Length: 628
Ligand code: CUK
Ligand code: CUA
Image 1: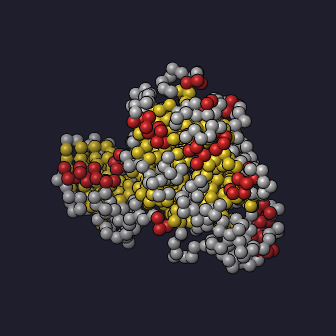
Image 2 (image 1 turned 30 degrees about the vertical axis):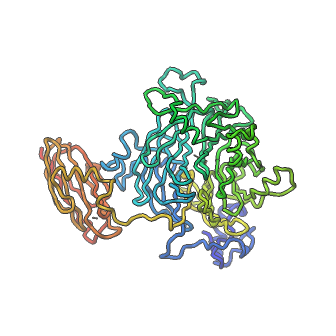
Image 3 (image 1 turned 90 degrees about the vertical axis):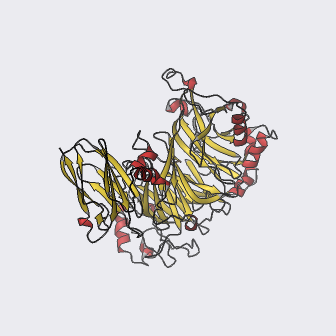
């Protein structure tokens, strides 16, 4: 229901200016392409404001890959920006009925067997020299305390690591400079350490830890014991420092206890010092875990060799590094301020050149109510989401620094209404040195009246904002299924996925090795191998047929069906779906995939192709015969 003007931008889709939702729909429906001036309360759009052109013409491609976390769906999604079209869903921690993630042997090797759900909040990509290298995406699982890695060449999850000794991994951030060798992961909720039932009623035993993983192996290298909890996490552009926000410096157990202090903190980590301690054996271990744990507590003294605790008002949430590599912005949440910390002053503190942790702060602008996250356009302006005000505020970093020094300057540039209650915001390429200031996405927690109602559960509203001009312009409403917390917009040229699987891909190498041990050549053989009560059924798929039109097993056999797609054509996926056995999985071009199940029901069961692949797709089927 939005209308574009000649400049390709949307004219004033801000529903707040209408008297009521019904009137708004009526007015929009009646307005012609140039008739938006008739709308109640709308203003003409200045042609100079924003020049991006919001629509992507039919048949043309988006400029950016958007990587959206899927929240408690447990997945990661790919959207095209600026069209905001959802292009793909990548199953990560969740069971996915379409692709068989969580059912195939190949995915179970990644997923393990503990959980079929998760809660992804943050997606970050691997770096080289402060921008993306196109290799990996990483995401967290707050629900089951894990981190995952996604291969960007095939857009599949390839590693999942459970983090011991902590609960609820929330913030994650990869090393940005010179390249991603480590991934940091923040444990959010404090819990008894060790958590063996002994200290449940003794809050003084509750702690959390920062974890560092090797980005190549996804194994944990060390953990760091900190005061308070940790919320969001950021790395700097030297590879030396990182920081986390803390909303519970009180280490409280109840809401009232957690909100006791006027200030909490941002804690900064000296990575080389921590790694030197690990190398020197200056650490402990916890319970059965053999991971080195370095003690980074000491908030009462401002920090330690490894940590710096900078007091920040109040229960801060987002923590984001500026693309000019100089600053990190901590958003105050319960305080109307954001605090700007200069990385070089963090370095000064660790080197003893300054002693008061607050001296690392160079600005503390007042931006509005409920500041949650801050993002950047690469031109010196910052944008902070205001949850309570339901606004995005644009402010200037240099002017905020001058104001902090006492100059009379107005650092606020603009406040834009969003709909409604915004959490994360992200500008295109903003988490890199190549921030380009074209688009900003506002991930709003409530959509309220923006979409046709679909029951008590409403979608969220991801709004696209053009930030290329002097003024922010809202151009698109995008409903999303709960709950994208965070997103990244990555220039298209930096991501280069393949179209057809390579036959030697490690993703199914174990299955290929199993076939080889059975004397089976997956590229041509269709064979049933019996090994006691284990039966391995190898077949090919070429549209419109499977290599086997039937196979026989015995009741009680453990059956492994291995399908290899020999079709050479891009975009030609098959599926193997076995009726009344709950088996279904994807086999894309040149992929091998397998699933194992017990043949526990006698009789004939049809298997069919579940991906519409050919005019004779319906005929692409066969029978499993289970002898009683
Ligand atoms: S968090 Cu959800 S709005 Cu988990 Cu990064 Cu801030
Ligand atoms: Cu193969 Cu449908």
